Image (cartoon, rainbow, N blue to C red):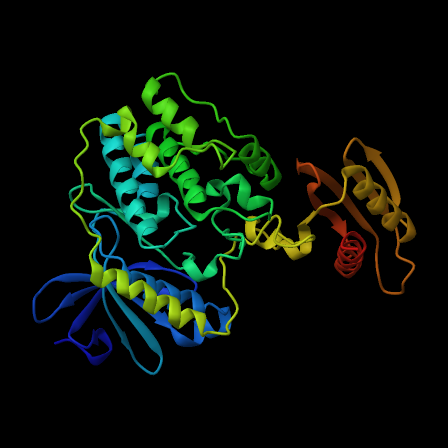
Length: 418
């Protein structure tokens, strides 16, 4: 017999499919029809603490609008005093990330078929005025027949998010997939940035690895801005051209969806999808627009609140697995490298450190703090140029007094932000 805790409305909850910071996903069965669904269970207290309520609302509103075979369907939303339940289409084949990790690169024939479906789904989203902004392997699911389903629209942009210049200005996405124009905080076209992310996905499908990857955040950013990732020899000329056109660092010359669909490599064995652009759904997007337009809540973005969102930004907690507040911290600044190094060195010397400089790295040691109760501290500071006037400062503590290290971080933040 099913207990009360295991049932939500007509849905009988089963095993856990996934867990996240603000939600868990469980397999569920409709006790009337017997059909299987994935139920996303969102703890209301968690979303309040994490300040992601607007993000959850946006995902729900957006999924109500989107009805396409290559987009995960939202069937209904239920709620209790403590939880929100999103009843979603159950996609049985896992995600592309797990598929590639387990099996490696995918054959060009199968990979092109997946890519065609990805572009069809994205084209539909853009037609509806929805720009995903967090396309990555983990957000592309596979059903039992190998058909792809785009999911996770919590960071999507809608018409009201464009400024008067016709561009988006909120930096979001995942580090390895983000387009270079998103990094520089001058505004970006949502369609072009989504195409870049799809280019990263296509590269990963056909090679089994990411085009822009490194253990160091600054190195990833430099590679993204430069573009032109190494393409293995086994990739066909048509696929190579497609990847290069999609990973063009210049969004003005980057290939568009229309260009992709007109490409001979893309059109090989391609079946035109059925028309999903019905008028009823077109009305729904206006409902989403009006509902969000009246909200005075701040825009919520994901963990990739990085370069360009402010002149000086701590990125440490996003990319380190250790307790970074104690060991390592990263900032961005728009000051020239020479000025940044001079300012850091000045601050260190004023705080009583002995400083050694080598190229763009500073090593500093303070044997004993002048303040009572504080020990010595050893740190290194390195500046990485991403593009002109956009630099990442990486500050690392080798050993020593944590409170003194925190004082140094705060002092540098104030100095470089002026």
